[in-house]
Length: 439
Image (cartoon, rainbow, N blue to C red; front, side, top):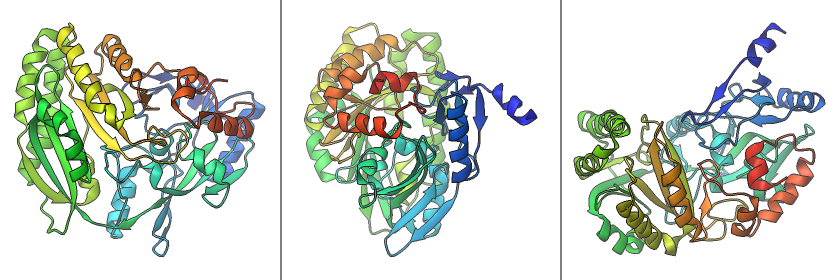
């Protein structure tokens, strides 16, 4: 009882510090049976339940004043099936631990996002993605999952077992139940050759479709207040491995991208008038480089400078026009933007609430240093993106509600009907889900 009361005093904050929650109690179940008991007790006490990962979402998708479920003890690899080429992993396992285990076993995910701090369940529940011409989000690589529903029932879902739940729960927003295990497709480990190269905004936008078509994974960053971009092309390589040098890698990934960038952001927040000059210097600081390494080491990068973010998925054919419009807005406004704008792509997939559901997509992500007022910039960006039928990332700041989202997702009604069936009393509800899914 003493431990329970100690935990009621906890205040939870997300990574960026823009979301705070004060749950009535915090639970860390060590098994699926213990989790089912947590759900039953919460329901009996009239409390809602939200599972939380590492807090890398910028929305309040995990916030609750009821029971906060931490997956700290639901970690580890359950099974590696080399015949089916799958790995089954506990939901609370950080992606970085999963990647390390797979690498030791000579295996790899096909694609991943650009950080790996999230838990497996947190990453898939919000639609975490990287960039890819043919390979889609982390959720699109799921072959089965285990879900504990509001009444404590354990559902094992796949294309063959509870396929309607599987179609939705791969990106479930925590609205259908608590994910306790995920089975991913894996493949033999391979090498990726990364080519990073500065390029002008005009050239990138003119050649965008060609750059996407010619590369397995293409992305770029535009530096506001400049005409400069940095591009990254990742393609499979026969080897040999040639990772970044220890010193040169530290200079690029830590000193420039984190250390000096942190200082630049701090200066820009204190004196916004300096931001355009800083942007011109920053956009020229990163030089071209090429290296070859294990996939997760190429896909991901350390992100130590904290920020807030908005990201929208657009039909891919609209990306360049939307980005040019954004550039024009920044140039004619008093906005001072210290963070680059990130552009990635994804093929269409078949997940009900995936931002790439049913259409080839391009993602435009905007960021601001933590503590910088973001309302004016994000409002301007959102106005542009919604004009192109944009779909907001579920874990990143946006103002869309169920009325808008029901029109943006052809299978929205399929998801909410399943939610009505699995959680009729809204055990997993919170303010964010009431806004984006309705009630």
